[in-house]
Image 1 (cartoon, rainbow, N blue to C red):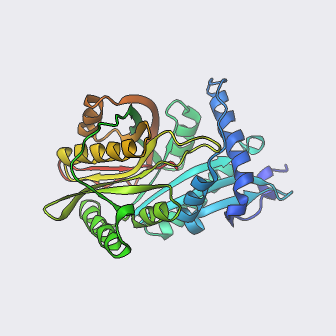
Image 2 (tube, helix red, strand yellow):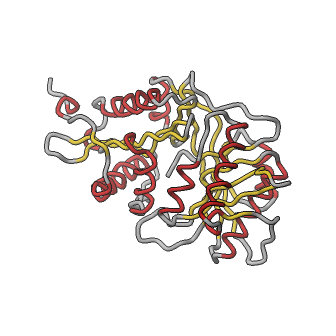
Length: 322
């Protein structure tokens, strides 16, 4: 019997000229997923091309697409690694070609690439109510972890914070030195992890910035954030935290206050945090500060490549969505 996957070409590296085709498929595939989960009123908008550029450049050779026999995009998967941390997303198969083995192929291809990069963590996120996806990933060796809870809060122009460093305000030499200090501090908590590429790309593409908390001349926490809108054609309405490290609860609070101050300075009215549920004290800090729960995703990791154990009180938030 003829099978659709038999006529799918080998993966190609995604280039920025592919973004319009990716956006069409992204919108169709995720809208279809929501509708099959009963959320019939949701239409997923196309992503901001600048956000796609960030994701494509960040993934590099791990940004892959597949074409059908007519040369049309039929699937894509972006496999990222930040040093020893590997994750994949977004990924999708065109709705008319689902159920024929393409999903397994694109996930297994990404797993192979990330293993070759010698990652010690390999994960993804999916909707917790989508039991088909959870079962699918489980059959490929992924196991469920805690929920990632998205929280948000309106910020005030009067927001106060401890003095902090903003990478975008530093001269190049000082910026390089501070980024190196962030890398060294993160590596002490999670060996092999490195968010320098994310920080650099964020600056180059003018998507946001990184705020750094220092104590006694040493880095104790930082937050990489984006203010560029996620959806194409939308205005700037929130600051989103992508990567956060804090050496303890008090430093985490200082990081959040510093990001809120950045948002207020830019006259952006909301801050959004995707918080992995294993950091309960950080969750309590946000709830006490007035953050509301807005969304949940299920964190899953490949069984033998889990997330690192941290020291007492440390917080490491790493967004596995673009």
